[in-house]
Length: 460
Image (cartoon, rainbow, N blue to C red; front, top):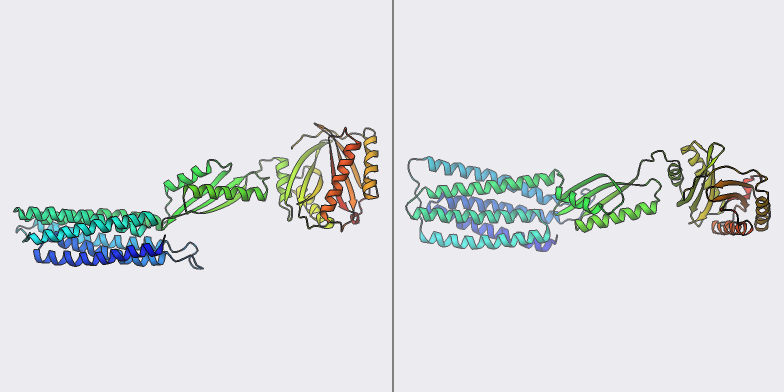
């Protein structure tokens, strides 16, 4: 909300209300019209309301600070609640006075002088002008306090019209019509004040807005997420949205962040200016072995991405192979330590796994079957030994084979210097994979796992 424009509007309301209080009260006392006195009281409440609004707007436009993390917007609603309560008390007293006059045997003395109608005509013009001005400003700035002022000024206009009709009947010979007009003004004010009280309390108590909640759910229709919690509150024309959504448990951090950004943009399009907070949680694992293993792997510090996760069934048990991406600045020794933590975490999370085969990379699911015999893979084993020796200077630390649905897969562990940069180690692993595929085109896949030579794992 533009503080300068809103404050100028509120200041105009203060001056107009002060003028109308004086005009109505003097005219009412001179003519003996209870209706005009009621209208003076009504304008008096508007004067209090305008002063409160001016104060509230100055407070509400202050930015958030250490004590008010959500800003000061609710000051407007506190002001609206205070003025509404005051309206109810004053209007109730005026209603009782009007009823007492109507119940009296002696008719009240009211002078329906011509100049009183002139005064009321001026009052009507002022009421109409300030009601229109406040309503436009309230819509432009989404201000609850300015909107409450607009409602009060509109009720002033209706009340003044009622007083005009009452004085016209008094001039025609019906003196009690003025009391009827006063009672009508009191009822109008009580009704308007009741609405303002309810709206102010709803905001101060953070009552959920059904319209805002529907808007948020519309924004989420295009997002593939599970909504676990939705909270919406409003203050000074601005919505605050608190969302908890669930994604697939094996979704990466980057995917979760991108999804949260997309949700914030979508909600902002439905509720302009809204403050949106999105918390992302993993969905329940539901016993899926691959998903549980992936979640455990992603929970290891410095693991950036997991992909090509495969489950292998071997002699009635399971083994897992996966590709893991780590920071490019890592040396092979650093990467190996992280992968050791990954292996231990995955095995702890999925006790049914016998072994984890990891391919390290710098920053589709297949059912596997039997393990071939050594004689069946003698030719491939010889080619692998030759390729690894050519690229590393020694034979692989470990070589094993698995028969998959798409064909036979070779799992190779090679030893490289522990201080070798991770990008270089990854390139060497890729070169070995390509060379083995060229030598053994019958293999469906080749997975090379790199370890630092200092680890001392003996070739198998």
